[in-house]
Length: 164
Image (cartoon, rainbow, N blue to C red):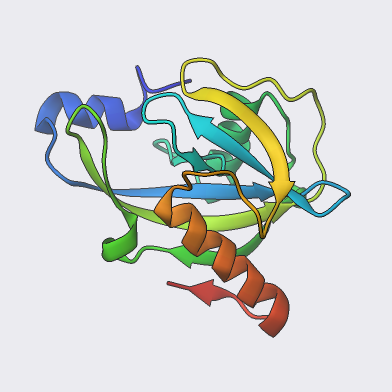
């Protein structure tokens, strides 16, 4: 869908750049070599995971599936998503966009090791995408992405859902 016409877009038309509380999803796609998919944002050049807001009448998994498709061209199935944590700490996940819009994001973080399709970044949001080792992500790394990567590492080590 992209931003225009989205639920957030419709709210922004009413409230301007005022801080919005936004539920959404982040997805860590891991290839057979254990590398994660990172994408470079078109608006500010930082590297992050595929992510985005929930839409009206949708859930976290819907957002994850949709955002992966829109931003990477890949298709992930709901059943292949494993939730490993949630990131809602306002000190980490309050974002100010180049146009001045502010969001406090509440993201359910998923990992997926299976998908289909050909990697083809969505040109309106993503400059490029690539797989990199999780301990050597591209720079500059979006601060919330660094936190999600550390949460995933703890999830693997402890075997329990992470909340931050």
